[in-house]
Image 1: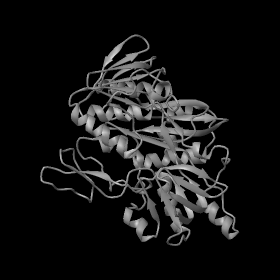
Image 2: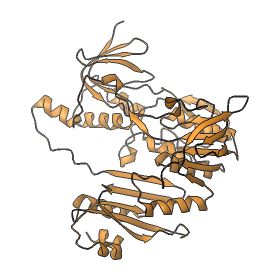
Image 3: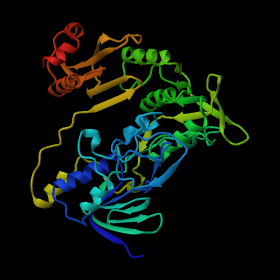
Image 4: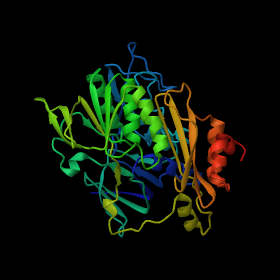
Length: 418
């Protein structure tokens, strides 16, 4: 089979691929030199309202019975899938959240790639990568040659079926990674109105989807084995606020146990979740968010991981040197009426400040992390844009702190004066 050949190939069609394409264009890539190969489908769903009207300007599309499939799924901002994509009103849909809107940049529609001469090769799963021969082979047998390969395959969700959990293949046991997954969840919400959902996992996905499902009037129970939610980032004090807030919104939380099996009805749809502690929960929908694993199988034994990027590629070609990429770790989340941001590293001693009462009408609180006498990380719930910029600056500057009590007393004002 005759193949296609490109100077550069990006394998993977997620956030990294879109931002990489933008950077290639900034660095002067020529039309026809770059291709993006992605296994994600080439169509997305459009939801029409009662008058068959779709508002493309703001992508405010609603949940109705009429749908059609149009358009190309160019790289998009995945965080939208666990937030506004699932809302009953003011719903986000493509093309509203293509990259690079997440960083405040230009929204790269499918037409942008065409105008730049970048080929989007979608619905194409690469099953073999020969890095020595610089060749990729798709599931359909297509052959792609390249000069330089950018691996942007990202990760895949960990599924309970991977561990042989009893009944984990029942219908309406769902995961969230791609638009197709989000569409399945949307259909489940519509089909199980006022039903019961069990969320397996207490991390990012668990917290955001619990909120989204409650907003859709679904009865929600979260189940996770840890002593508090999101333990990789949250301290016990931070987590106590969110667990209390979610409880006030009607989300039930069961900690210290895991799902060990599922029962289904005669149609194969999940009806019960069996927990390790012996409890059995009713469920019309189960959403599993227990982590992910890197998609690196294609490249096992062929490549070593190292820092690099597009400018690194261009500098090598042109014999130039560049500065090391300066990256400040950043995480954020939005759920219900809450919105938090975190910058830096959550290592060392943690200092909690502000109003973290779950019953407060407008809670605002945060935490500093101090290591070796310097502030290395900052978390803030309910911050304004200026306040969020201030905590980002603190995490980047890492100002010295001699007395932790000072941070507790000054709270957010410490960040705002840096």
